[in-house]
Length: 377
Ligand code: 2NL
Image (cartoon, rainbow, N blue to C red; front, top):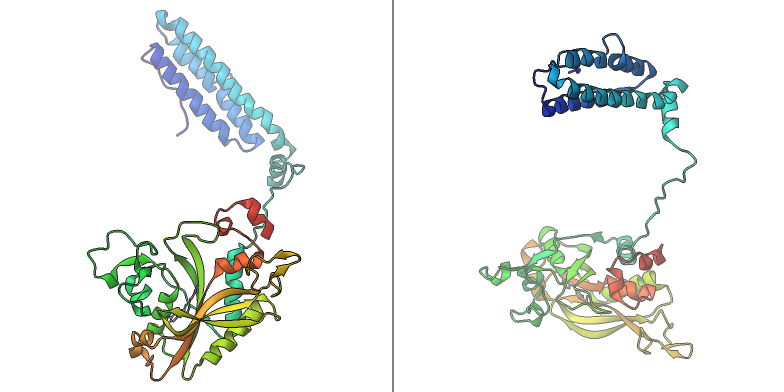
């Protein structure tokens, strides 16, 4: 509603101040709405015109109508009001230069944008070395026809341990190694929630949904109850793989992983399998590649090679033939251990990124220090 001058009945200091404030507020509001030179002139006349402008009306209504004893105070208030209103109207005159230049939109933009100022820099980010390694590993297997599967980070004991053939009292289930969700004691063990310690649960979940043959890789975040140090982080990343079909052999495992290591670390690396143990594979092995730091010599110039501890070999992953006991849990979906066989493997993405980029402290990957990350830009 447009402002109109009110009649005053109460001439107390408080009432005068309130009436004056309302008047200034209304004038400021209208000043902000002025958009062109024509509007500015109409605004000026409405408030300052000698004949019937708002200030003239105030003079007539407030000052002339005031009782004798209030005249002095009213006069002072009206004078102050005149100064404020005149300032507001003059304030618009200063900016009206740009209206006079032209009322066109482009002219107003030109007045608002100083093209001599430097532009806003929006630096492009760089892919994090861990995510880059993750993507490279996944893509090597995708080219072999593997699909990518992902799954929940909060898992049940069943998918993380039981279906992977961990015995009920296996030490990995200890709170020293695994981070459990609080308040789960009332549930049966298999339903208790925890942060998955490997991505294997997704392999079980995928076998429950998809019948063989399958070839999948599962990248993901995993957690273990390890205190952080140069080679441990309570949160890290893993990529596991699984191939199940009729007549899959250890030879298929060796050929697949030998190819993958050459694709990842260069065609000159050699692979070496050493017997190992995992609850979910039988037989199991650790895979070593010739050290890509020292080229397998164990020496860097005169210095001993640290990453391979002078052996010329670096351990890169664990693998094996899927244990028949694991297939028993998904037997009803076509995984009869009498009919199918498969191999599986798992590797730590962060560990491989440390080796690939010659970083000596895993903590650097997770501290978000721009000085560190910029080196990968
Ligand atoms: C390691 C070892 C491995 C697997 C993971 C797996 C999954 C299923 C069945 C059998 Cl469902 N195996 N995964 C197998 C061997 C090793 O990881 O050292 N990872 C960092």
